[in-house]
Length: 581
Image (cartoon, rainbow, N blue to C red):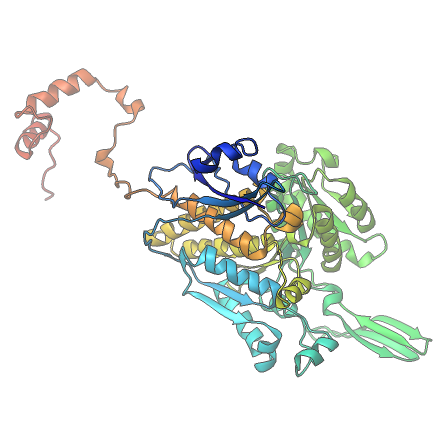
């Protein structure tokens, strides 16, 4: 068939594509029309390359011009089959070298498989062009690294996290018996999470829904969850035993008399005995974190236990309720956040909580629960909201001096199926939203810790402001990319972007948004004498008399008084400062 080449150029100002190759205009007039970027996106086939969308968030006002290269779509049209294929490449020809901001100290824990690959790409394209990350401390918690170091790398990472206080962690693998053989490991290394929670005096794991402005997900408004970070089944001791008697004996540390907590006769020939405990000393701290966050995000709090059956869980509810009544109830009532819960903090049996999570899709609530219940319930929240990639997972602990330690990670795993596809040379489309939220959370906390340590340091204050603006701008670029229909395939279907294309598209949009915020030169720093008098003060003064007085001593008539005349004026008024004896 006969092929007619033509080119479409894009003007960032008018957001319209215009055909300029006049040779084919008359031939193509019946089949082409001027399209907005979103129209072209809808018109292209699944194999079409990605189109540029030129909208800029209204909040990113710019006083400095930005130089973009000519963006074009090279098309070829077959007159025989009336099909059109598009190829696109966006460029930014602004070559200005900008000084990077020195990122504050942070612990970076790397994992493996698909999430490690994707995080490496977004660090290279989103973070390193803007930040000097030389103060980050990196620890490789891949199975091979843990095996090669006999898990010393995990101990080092925990020590670093305790010292620095801000941690980003990629998803890691806890190897199964089969993976131990496949990877040739010495042993099945346990989950690093337990060591981290113990080493950082873990209080809670905050798992919240992630929302994209303009896109409706499972919950319309945010849902918060606090999962007690310690105790329960995860730290259990167990063994397989036969017939006999099991005694659980408590031996007081203060030398008091031991006593039996539980005694039971085992009559089966095959039994599994499990012993665990729930440490409650930090539940008050969990309560303060939870209720403060619920107030900040304007959501209604609920406490979840199974205390009607598991009587030992009563202490969790009692402590949470006591803290609430003593410190927070009035604030929640004033904010109207208890209207949906009958004017008080409500307790939910875990079975009921399971049902409400499905029903309360308007969101706007928070829950706090024990370790295991929290794990199960937040998995359900993730499924209602779309997937584990749309909720956060942030461990909050406390250092010996009382400083909050915060570790941020995605709530999903290493995404092995996509990694296998990647190794096989197939296209993948990983949504990095959870990874990005974790990384930005860690960077924001690191900046806040640095500011807390040096509140008067001008460079630190500038860094803190830059980090906050950067994280906000990156979220906007990321969310807008989804909204323009340029997201990954879990959001946009089979025409969605690949892992690499999506990360590149967000990087391009991020750079545009940041560039539009850049001043050509720093604004002047004003001192007190440069400022106008407040209007309230001016009302108290006789401005005409002031002007007459000024003109009397302004001998040159140039609107200023020299030192000689200034001294005369002060002497005349009797307010000239005198030497101290």
